[in-house]
Length: 236
Ligand code: FPP
Image 1 (cartoon, rainbow, N blue to C red):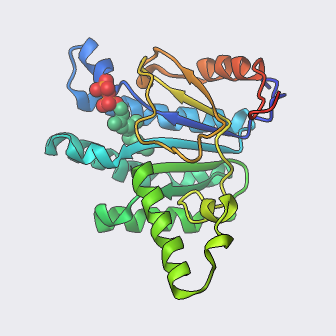
Image 2 (image 1 turned 90 degrees about the horizontal axis):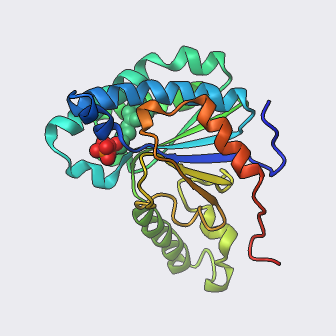
């Protein structure tokens, strides 16, 4: 197994480049998303094999709702298929699934499938696969502020009780450690409203590979690169 001497527990990924992958091949964007969904399965298996404890994937951002209806429908269709056909494999591989994001925006059958997958994999303890769906980090932070403000207003907490730990527990990612490594594919170097609070001390890695072409071998190369870095968390 790839050496893990830098305490790599949690990898977060911005899966980018599905559209360009398809365009290069003269295919519709949907073909890129379809291949990208296969890569999700491959990389989930790879992360488990490599002993990673948490993998967080950005499947659909709050901003993605603004894409054409056709593309949103394609992405929701792939998600539906993934949610409805993937339970056996997740169970077989002892994967626990979590979803982060605004559930209100999603169709009821999708939310029902998410609830079912979360419930049926809750006791698994190899890899935790966290899927960001209808997720926006600023929205998440504002939601947390609202929860804290409501507690203070009710008198359940005093303003001085508010600290980093408490605030973290108000986020969707409660109980999930912060990512150690963020990977973004397709050559873009942006955070795009992803895990803004949680990425405070995360190492970043950008690769030109389009998400549909991303694979276990490249993941291992990136892990080796991560292991060679010195993490100081602001200290000398
Ligand atoms: C970015 O490519 C990718 C997305 C917006 C969605 C990611 C979705 C998947 C990988 C498939 C479905 C997911 C699951 C969990 C089954 P882009 O369309 O922005 O590509 P571009 O920048 O090249 O246009």
